[in-house]
Every structure is written in C-alpha cells, then in structure tokens.
Length: 254
Image (cartoon, rainbow, N blue to C red; front, side, top):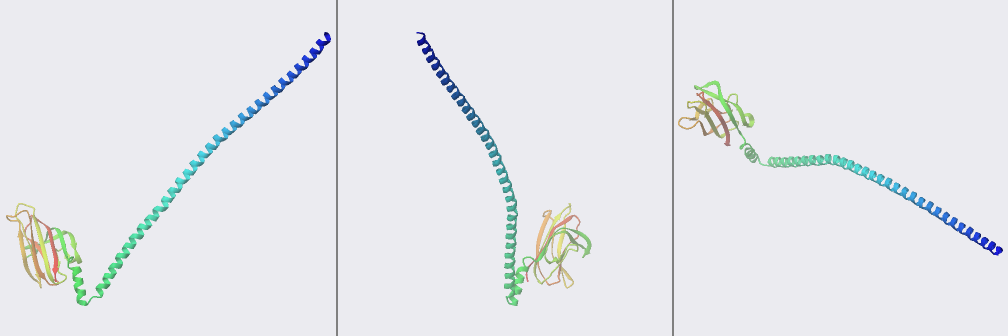
C-alpha cells in the first residue's frame, strides 16, 4: 500500500513538474508576446513621429516652392513690363517712320510736277492757313486820321508772323483777295464805333465801319479787299468804352 502511494506521489510530482514547466513555457511565451507588442508599439510610434515630421517637412517644402514661384512670377512681370514698353516704343517709332516716308514720298511727287503745277500745289497748301486771328484789342495811343490803331494782347493764329499785335498792323505777304473780320463789344453806356483801314502804296482807305448804335453791345462785320504784297491792314477807333473781341484776316485766293 505504501509502495503504491509512493509511486502515485512520484507520478503526481512528475505531473506537477510537467505542469510547472508548461506554465513556465506559457509565461515565457506571454513575455515574448508582450515584448513583440511593445516593439510593435514603438515601431508604430516611430512611424507616426516620422509621418508627422514628413508632413511638416513636406508642408514647409511646398511653402518654399510657392514662395519661390511667387518671386519668379514677380521677376517675370518686371522683365515683361520693359518688353511691353519697348514694343510700344518700337511701334511709335515705326508709325513715325511710316508717316515720314509718306511725307517724303508726297514731297517727291510735288517735286516731279511741272513749275506751274508746283506753284499751284504750294498755293493749295498755303491758302487755307495764311492769315491771323487776334483778340483782346484796345488803344495804344497812336493817332491815325483822328482815330487810334487797335492793338491786341492775344493772338490765336498768326501764320508767318505777318501780323504785329503790338502795332495792330497786318502786312500782306502775297497779292490776292483777302477776307477781314472785325468784332467789337460795348463796355460802357455810350455807343462805340470802329473800322478797318487799308493802306496801299502809302494811300489809305476805309473798308468799312461798324457801331453799336441801335443794335447791341456786341457787333461784327466782314469785309473783302484785294491787297498787293506789302499792303497793310489795320483796325481803328475813336471811342474809349469798348473792347475789340476779335480782328482776323484770311487769304481767299491769289
């Protein structure tokens, strides 16, 4: 009986040892598994940290690229603006050159005309612009047949400078039919009068007179006269309360 119990105890002890060994094996496996889990957790944390760092680095890299692109665009704009100005300047010079070529061509065409045709062409160019327009006229104290010559403060047009505003005298540069116009304005209570005077070969004659009597405070009149080269034309008055708002003359034809 005791022998059998001894054998059973030995078997029990062996089984217990085997169970302890199995438990130890399971404990070792558990520790290994825990270590693997910790390793995986560290790896995951490392990957997450690296991912964050990569995202931050990528963001900064994109910002740098965008900043560089902005700078490049500004530089391109600065370079393109002078190019646009250069193109505009070139176009202006090209247009001016084209106009100059046209003018030179027209001048050559005029030079190829006959002498009579050249004279006629020159007259066609001169006629519409030959003359003067003056305004703001008043006395200068120069007596001329008990009248004073009207001088002018302003000259809007004076082709060839044949009109002298300081003396109020226009000298005809060429012979032809001229059209003169005179406008006066009454500035006081009394009526005023003025006229246009023509001098040829030192002989003077009135072209006509205008006044504000029974009319209005401002009157105008137009006169035509044939003048030789060197003839003179002027406006005169004997009144004080007036202003000559305009005195003009234009060559109609020769």
